[in-house]
Image 1 (cartoon, rainbow, N blue to C red):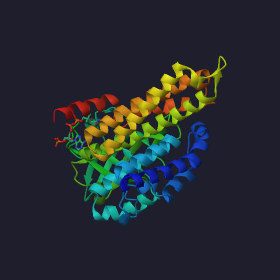
Image 2 (image 1 turned 180 degrees about the vertical axis):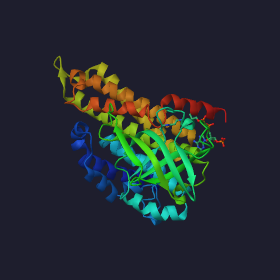
Image 3 (image 1 turned 45 degrees about the vertical axis):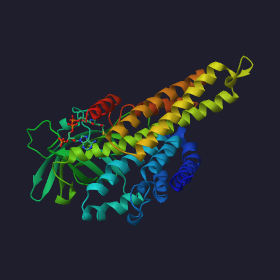
Image 4 (image 1 turned 90 degrees about the horizontal axis):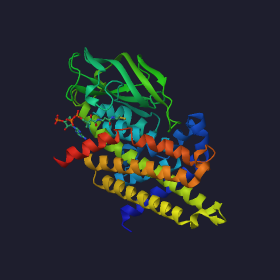
Amino acid sequence: MHAASEELEQVRALARQFAESELRPNVERWDRERALDPAVLAQLGELGFFGMLASESAGGMGFDLPTYVAVLEELAWGEPTVALTVSIHSAFVLGLLLRHGSEAQQARWVPKLVAGEVLGCFALSEAQAGSDAAAQETQARRDGDGWVLNGRKKWVSNGRIAGLALVTARTDAPEARRGTKGIGAFLVPTDSPGYVVGRRETTMGLRPVEVVELELRDVRLDADALLGEADAGFRYAMEGLDLGRLGIAAQAVGIAQAALDHAVAYAGEREQFGTKLKDFEGIQFKLADMATRVAAARALVQSAAAAPGTRAAAMAKLFASETAMRVTTDAVQVFGGYGYMRDYPVEKLMRDAKATEIYEGTNEIQRVVIARELYR
Ligand code: COS
């Protein structure tokens, strides 16, 4: 085996071990209680999972992207919201900070983010703008050397427990309603006065993660809060999404693999009409298709990680999320009446899978992105 792939497989095995011993036993309870144990986030920090993308000299793991997505896949196999939390933190906060942050910004935040002492969240979406990210209305007004932010953000995962939020806001004239140029990205400590966490959403799946509305009420920030250029926030958000979508694609593969494993185990034990389910051709064909789809999705995600880009990430997210939806739905079918019950693990995975077709750009948006790229 090539040395790089050998290392990837070793790291993958460690992540699987962690998922198996620390995540899997709690999945049903976390779904019911709508919260992860805080200790799990601390463990993730200790193991270095919050610093996968930072170099070793910056205290991180220095993983390449194929290794990073393999870890996310395994974490998602254990509990999808753990992979989501790590992905958002890595792609939108740590990743963009490493790429566009000043030396001072990196010195202030990177060590804490890498250690998991500070969790990152991302606030781009707004109720009215929805998929049209350029139509956001949150305002960033200059105030001496610094800035004052006002507005409302929606669907912010981990907006309450995060210590640092990357918030996008209009830096152009207040009357500008749409435009990709007049948007900035700001590093907002969540203990800033005026950072107000609003309503928690009640979600179909991914229930352990807290998704909130955010209000920015005269949030005063010093000049150092602006990431990079004041008019480049939209581009940074899109760059973050290129990596974020790869993470969601990996999460989707993990969800699909988990559903496949449950279906294989169940069909190997359950008897109907005096025969194991696995010996019925109808079930065999279903399991074979599920396994093939999962393998294809994993291969696409790995190839997108090996040669990253906007189109590759969109394709990986599109294909892997549809795979997750299909495979989890099939797994519920293999379980029959039991599959529909909360006593068995597959209906939860079906609820979790649906999110991957929607967030970080709906699959309709992914298709728009892919089609546009075909003409570039
Ligand atoms: N990387 C770097 N730059 C990018 C980029 C990317 N992936 N995608 C777009 N840009 C740049 C473009 O190059 C363009 O720059 P120039 O004006 O200098 O040429 C600028 O950003 C505007 O791009 P575009 O014209 O494509 O903007 P649109 O308003 O048409 O964007 C989409 C449309 C659909 C791509 C965008 O609104 C989008 O991705 N929406 C979904 C948002 C989303 O995923 N939300 C989920 C919530 S986040 S958790």
